Image 1 (cartoon, rainbow, N blue to C red):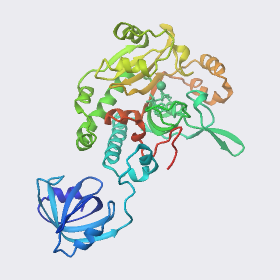
Image 2 (spheres, rainbow, N blue to C red):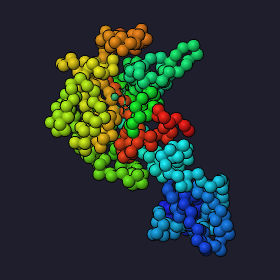
Image 3 (cartoon, rainbow, N blue to C red):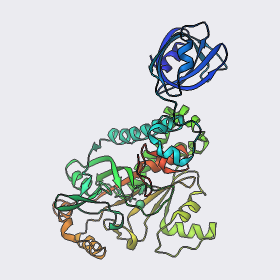
Amino acid sequence: MDIQKALDKGKGKVSIKGWVYRKRKQSNQVFLIIRDANNVIQCVIEKESKAFEDATKVFIESSIEIEGDIQKEPRAPSGYEIKVKSLNIVHLGEPYKIAKDFSVEFLADNRHLWLRSRKMTSIMKIRHTILSAFREHYTNKGYYEFTAPVLQPTQCEGGSTLFEVKYYKDQMFLSQSAQLYSEAFIMGLEKMFVIGPTFRAEKSKTSRHLCEFWMAEMEAAWMDLDQMQDDIEELLKHIVKKVLQDNKAELEILKRDISKLEPIVKKKFKRMTYTEVLDFLKKKENMEVPWGKDLRTVEEDNLSKNFDVPVIVTKYPKEIMAFYKPEDPKEKKVALCLDVIAPEGYGEIIGGSQRDLDVKAMTKFLKAEGEDPKNYEWYFDSRKYGSVPHSGHGMGVERVISWICGLDNIKDAIPFPRTMERFKP
Ligand code: 4AD
Ligand code: MG
C-alpha cells in the first residue's frame, strides 16, 4: 500500500514500499523515515528484531519494503510510526550522492536525482495541477485540444530567438508558438487550446527566461479583446483556486505565503492600457518611460508591486508588436493586444491579441522584419476564405508555476531546464 493509505488506516498491520529519506541510528534502535510519491512515515526497528541488521545497512535512497504495525506517534513527522516486523531491501545501491553539497551547480548537475527532493516533487505536483486546470477550464467551455508541429518553416515571434534545425536539405525552426497553426485550425473547430513545448534562443540570463519552456495557448473564432480579458481572468482564478484546493501540503512544504494567492480568486483583476501604465508609473513611481518603448522588467515590477492581483495591460504601441497584432481602428498607433503581469514581481505570464485580418498590413510588417511574405501564404489563406474575427493568447506555464509556488528562479518550474548555459542532464 502507499504511505498515505497506511496513514489513513492509522492502526494495525500495514505494508509499504518506498525509499529511505532519513536515517538515524541509536545503540538499540534504528529510525528510518521512508518516502513515496505522496508522503513520508517514520519507521522504528528495534535491536531484537531480525530486520535490525538490514536497517543499519541501508543508505539514503535505498529502496525497501516494510511490514509492521502502525500507531500514533505525535513526535514523528506525519504523526504516526510503524513498528517494523520485517524489512526487505529491494535495492541497497550506493551511498547517496546528494549528501553534503547543496550548491546550485551541484544540484543542477544532479538534477535527475534532485527531482526526488520534497521541494521538487512539491513543485511538480503543482505543475500537474496547473496543467490540468488549464485543460479543464477550456474543455468545460467546449474547446478542442489541438497539437501543433514542433518543427516549423517560419518564425512567429521574431527571427532573433529562433533555433535552427537541419531538415534533410532544408532548414526548419523549433516552434516559438503554436499560434499560426492554431489560427488555421479554428476555422474548422472554432475554439481550441494547445499545450506544447516552445523554444526561444534567449540571449538574456535571467530568473524568468528558459530556452525551452511550455506554452498553454488558446485560440477562438468570433472572440474580441474584451471577451478574451474576461476569459483570462476566469482561467487564472480557476488555476489558483485549484492549486489552493489540491496542493495545500505542497504549498506548505514550499513555505508559500498563501495570503498572497487568495486575492487572485476573490478580487477583480486590474485592467489598464499601456498609455495608462506610463501615466501611472510617472505619477506613482516617478518613472519616465517614453511612449513607444516596450515595458521592461523594471517597469513591470514597479507596476505589479502596487497591486495584489494580476494586471492586464492592453493596447501596446503597434510599431513594436508582432506582425499579427492588428491596429486599433479607434486609435491607430496602438495594437489590440494584451500582456498579463503577475503580482509580486513575477512579470509577464500571458501574451495575447486579437488577430490581424488585413493581409496587406501583415505583409508590410513581415517585409520590414526581413521575412519573405511568400512563406506565409498558407497562413493568409485563413483570411481569404471566410475570414472571421478571432483572438488568442499564450500562457507561459513555467512563469505561472514560478509565481504560484513563489520560486526564486524559473529553472525549478520545469523538470530538466534548458537555459543558455545549462542543457545537461
Ligand atoms: O508573449 P509571447 O511571446 O506570445 C506568443 O508567443 C503568442 N504567439 C501566444 C499566443 O497568442 N498564442 O509568449 C507567451 C508567454 C509569455 O507571456 C511568457 O509568459 C512566456 O510565454 N514566455 C516565456 N517563458 C519562459 N521563458 C521564456 N523565454 C519565455 N518567453 C515567453
Ligand atoms: Mg509577450
